[in-house]
Image (cartoon, rainbow, N blue to C red; front, side):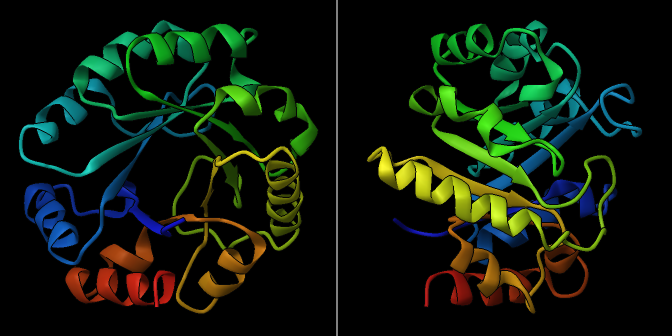
Length: 218
């Protein structure tokens, strides 16, 4: 399974978004991670449907949309229509994870389910046969630039064992505090999709993207 870099748009300079998306594509990234925050589920507000819609026209990247919003099922159709390729929601944010996954699937997008650092892996085991991806947050969601919480990598290892034991091909994504000095440890724990924000967008974006990819797929 190829390892994938999903740079987080949250760390981009929003006055140069088009140009910076071109740079990560030029550097070889295949995904862009889009954090949608509602100020209710997490204590911050980011961007939403209009931004995704407008950048979709100028990008061939896979749109990896991470919904940090309450009752995500209300917006599945709108985000899919805006250009989301993967729709990832928090198990803690809905009373109907099964219905939300079915809705995403019916819209033709890939399904993802996310857990916060303090949510046990056991919360999402029953959904593994229905999801294409599990995202394990390695920081408390809401703000970029936080350091990775070490114990969260134990959850990545635990999930990887369960996925392998079930014979599934589920992608395991990690988001939060991933940098050049810890990315190998994250991969070693079992993740194959790496979200990185500041480490990609601060400095030379093309060079940073290529450097990450050389570690991800040596």
